[in-house]
Length: 550
Image (tube, rainbow, N blue to C red; front, side):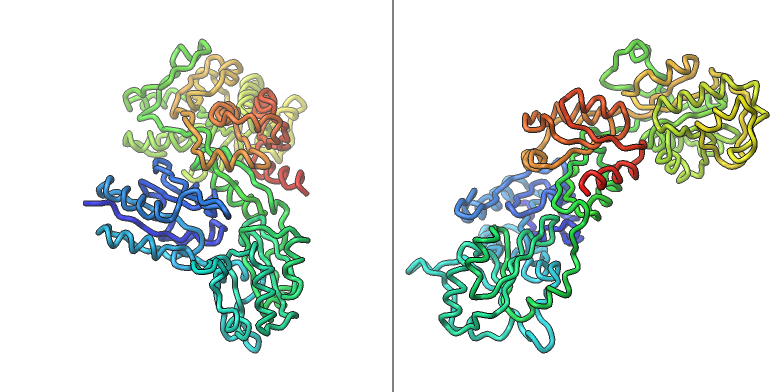
C-alpha cells in the first residue's frame, strides 16, 4: 500500500534531453525530490500540485545528507499510499548519481520503485561541444571517472592513477574541477603525456555552456586563469582536438540569457520554444490561468459599474438561441475563442449556428485560432488591441452610408472610406453591411475593461471565461525568477499579479519586454524598465528581444 518511487535521470541540463518517460512521471507526480543541478525548465514540467522538495547539494556544502535523502524517500512512500514519488537527479541516476544507494534503501524497506534512466553528461556534454568520446583511429574506448571521491583511509582521491595514465582511451572526469590540478600532476607523474589535449566544459548543454581548451601540463593554471567553475566536466585525450572542427553549438543571439515568460500555461509553449531556439533559458511562470465558464454569462451590472466580481456564474445554455439576435461577433482573445466554442459544442450546437454572421477579431493570433474552427474573419484592425477593434467597429457604424463603396482591400475606395480602409485587414471578398450597434456581440473575459463598451455602448457583452490569478510562486521558481535577466509580459494582469506574487525587491528596475501600450504602462507603474514590441504580436515581441540583446 506504499507509494511508488521513480528514480529519474533529468539529463545534463537541456530540457529537450529529458526522456519522454521521465516527463510522463513528473507530470503526474505527487512529490518531487530534486537535486541542485536539475534545470528550472525541467522543474517547470512537474505537476503544479506536487510537493517540491529541494535536497540539492553544493560543493563543500551538503544541503541534505545522502543518508537523509534515502530515508526521506522511504518516508514519503510509507506515508502516502498509492502516491507517485519522483526522485529527480541530474544526468543518470546510476552514473555517479548514488541512485544505487537510494534503490537499495527502498528494497530494504519493501518500497516499490522504478529506474528511469537519463542521458549522462559524460557523453552528452562532450557531444554538445563537438567532441566525440570515441573516434576511429583516435580512441576505441572511453572511461568515466569521478573526480572527487576520496578514500576513507587517507583522505586522498581513490583513483588508480597508474592504470589511468596508461589508458589509451578517452578519460572523462565528472565533477572534481577543484581537484583537477592534483589529478593532472599525478597522471603526468605516472607517465601520461603532458601534451595530452584537455577540455573543460562548463554548464554543458545549457545556454551558458562554455568550453575551455588546455593540455595536461597547463590544466591547473588554465582553470585558475579562465575561472572555470562547477558544474563542469573534464575530457582528456586526442578526441578533444576534434572539438575545434566539430563544435556545432554556436553562440545564439540569446545565449546566456534567462528570461521569465509570464503567459498563461497553455499559451506559453509557442514563445518558449522560440526563445529557447534562440539560445535563451526560459522559466515559464504563468501569472494567470483561465477557466471556461459552463456557459456564457451576460455581463453583470457590477462590472459595467467598474467593479469586478470574484467569479462569474453561467446561465442556461439556451442563451445560444439568442445568437439569432446578432449580426456580428467580436472576439477579443484566443481564450475567448476557445471558451466560446467549447460552450457552444457542450450545449449541443455547432458552427452552423454562425451562418451568415460577420466575425471580427482583435488581432492575427485570435484570427488564426478562429480559422482552426473553420471560421474566417471579416474584420481585423491594424492596431491589435481592444481599442483598435472597438474603433474599427465604430468606424463601420459611422460609415454605413458608404457601405457599397468598398468591396475589398484591393479595390478602389471612395475618398471618405480610404482612411477607414487603411485601418482594416479584411478577408478577400468581404463587404461592409449596414450594422446596428445593438446587434454586435462582444465575447470577452471577466477582467476585460470598458474600452470597447465605451466605443460601442449598445453592444452586448458575454463573459465566456474568467481569469484567475496564480496564488503563489514556488521557492524553486522564486530563486530562478530572482536571477533572471528580464521578464516577458503579454498583459497588464500578468504584470499586476507578477508583482503581487513575487514580492521580490530585487525586481525593482528589472528589464521587461511588453506587448502593447497598456502592458507597458502597467510595468512602468511598478518600476520596470520596459522594451515594447512594435506590434501587438509574439513575432514582433521576439524580434524586439533579439534586437535588444544583439
